[in-house]
Length: 234
Image 1 (cartoon, helix red, strand yellow):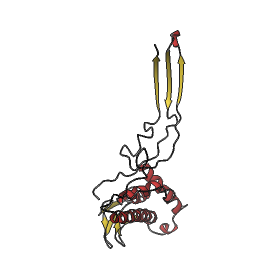
Image 2: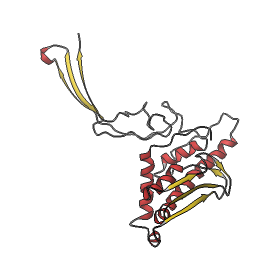
Image 3: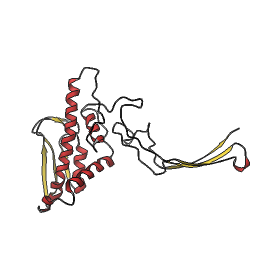
């Protein structure tokens, strides 16, 4: 893949992984607990041809349980691979590797499947003016991840709207302003102080936007900030 697709914000990936690990491990991994916690290693191979997507989620699963794990990728995100290709090797603590591998492979397989299927449609439409767009019909909780995988596979984001080619969720900011008119007894002189985004809410992440993973054209990305102003009308 020649085009580098922006990866979703790290906070989004970590949240996806945290939910997956909590669901998978619950109060503990009985199987992993049976193993001696020693240094071990492993590798991942492709069982069939496809387009690889999901490396950031794969890595995050292992690092969530072993911050010192080493993962050496032999392919890049978006590369096409053949059956039997070694995708990566990894080494770390045995219990962490066993506990993380299920979620790591689930992310890698799901997102690679999305990218691969997208790539097949893109190839069929090559030479035409038709483009493959993503939609909001994604797996619950994985909208951002799957929209990203569609782009890795050669698709384009969202459905055309006046604002561009992406669907973004609604969010609410709370702005507060206090103003005083005719201050100091001067007609037309107004002083105001205020705070925008009082609760410091982050905008929804946007995998198709280049500015820190957020849509600056639609949302306030500054975070909470105070201001003051003076107006005078003649």
